[in-house]
Amino acid sequence: MPRQKFIQIESKNAILELLKDGKPIDRIYIAQNAYKDPKTREIVEMAHKQKVQVIDINRRSLNRITKAGSVESVVAMTQAENQWGLRELLDKLYSQNMTPFFLLLDHLKYEQNISAVLRTAFAAGVNGVVTPISRDNFITGESVRISMGAALRIPIVEIGIFEAIKILQKNGVRIMALTMEGKSFYETDLKGGVAFVLGAEDVGISSKVLEKVDQQISIPMREGIGSLNVSASAAVVCYEKLRQEVSA
Image 1: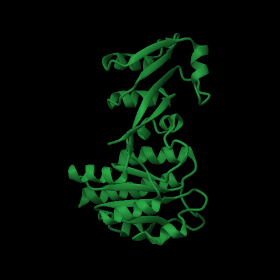
Image 2 (image 1 turned 30 degrees about the horizontal axis):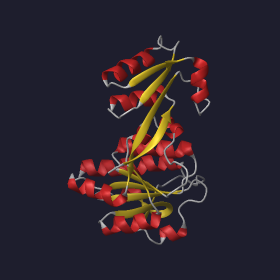
Image 3 (image 1 turned 90 degrees about the vertical axis):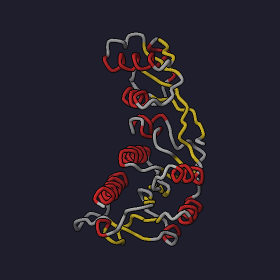
């Protein structure tokens, strides 16, 4: 079963997406002068329908509880319920006759990139994002804001990457590392159970991880360009896999 982590959301767009998706929200704080805004009114209407507590609060008090220096007039408190163990997530997927489709993040550093990857992954039908265990929360209010709620809607697995590769391979999932030296992604069969490994922004995928993968794939580029942003790379290969599955 998914595990919970407490998250504070400082984005009206993210709050709206979560409400529309029926995700549980504990309570919502709204600045007392914010009700003229149509988006805020929509949040309040949906919150009342879903019996979410809405609390009026003065602007100074709201500013005191915000963490991102945001000027948003709405703040939501929720429990992240998308933290999974890898084996239990695989069991769930197979019990529902779903094909495993994962992203493995090899120590990505920048929250902006991670958030963009999570939103792309959710949109493309990825059913699990694997990241190394960290002392800090992988999902934060800022990543929820940047991903517009997608960070709370896609299963997240925190586990050592070598252990994850071993478990996935034992379950018939091919591990494909996205590098500059691999076979072109559009000449590669991406259908079926696949996990794409994405490397850190500055150093890429570690050599020890590359020794464990089943295959390396690459995105062809014109001369003079070393690589794409990691979130752009994720979008390219995820949607090529989706295209191949649909065309099969």
